[in-house]
Length: 422
Image 1: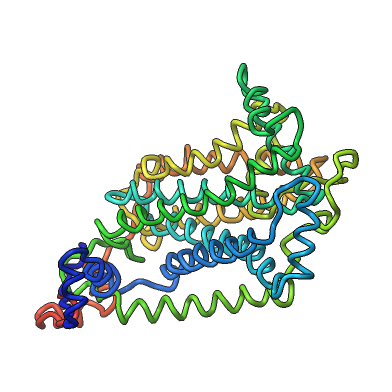
Image 2 (image 1 turned 90 degrees about the vertical axis):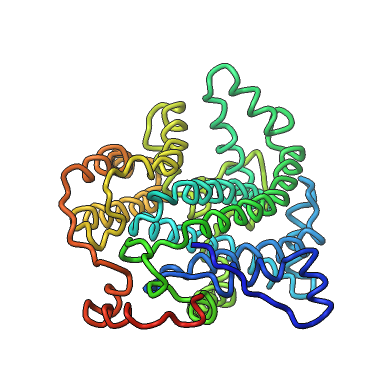
């Protein structure tokens, strides 16, 4: 599936460099002539959007740390100094803070698209697992970044989440002390989290490179889930999909900028504008919105150890999806039963997000338990059984047929290949 490079620089200097380090040929074969299924829709633009958001987060983060002081008595005021005294510091901070939320919005859409169209199925299992590793690293990075402003919600969020590890038998207390760097959340904890928050995005970038490499071996999946059969099924990445990705990115950036300039604190918490105080506990401790579904699962289990196991199990089960789904058909477009269960699962995930923000009492806890049971039921029972009992709809003979119809596809198949697809 990988595109063969026809890159031949005319400039003598570029030709000399290419003969010794063929970066130009690699870029040309991977992002210019690389063949993609011709029926990709706008849900496939979120891969490029995520790449852009990663670069944006690293760039704004590097500038912000030039003005941030990772010390328990200075961190809060240094963030206020960034907002008030640094030229365009308010813009950098809002870009970075809202960028984290936009990053997670894009990654959740990317994951749900993969689940709907079966992008985790053979031969893309490693691609899916690498994507889940990126998701896990994003969650760790986001959590540690949330601690850095050292406001009330930062401090108590770090206290609650790190304390979860104490539920692990035998070694739990030692892990918590190691995470804290002492016997409470304090300056050593802040320094640890700052160091890891700075390091992990570069680790994410490394795994993203592996993710793209793994994608370029079998090529992209497509809305029909039908494999590429000949060159008529594909189009070169440039200009067809660069233009499509650029349009999708512009639309996404409009939403991003709307939050940055008009609702910069909408996805944050007001208590985080109060400096951390270990003697005053907030009335209701909640993490950032993108952790809320997993937080609801954690709180729905009466046992502390059971809650921790279920919370991490909710993430771990996503890694196993390629082997839990027994259906031979990839796309939900041709799986009527799975399509219904998929949208129920989306509603369950949104419901868990809402319940994670609600007080852990009364009907909220009961609803959280019901949705938690369904969350695991979807992956561990419904996915394996659907592949055995579901009757899928007939698949198109080729990607070209799904786009042009049978008659036009037959005419196109008899025509010579377009030069740019070679």
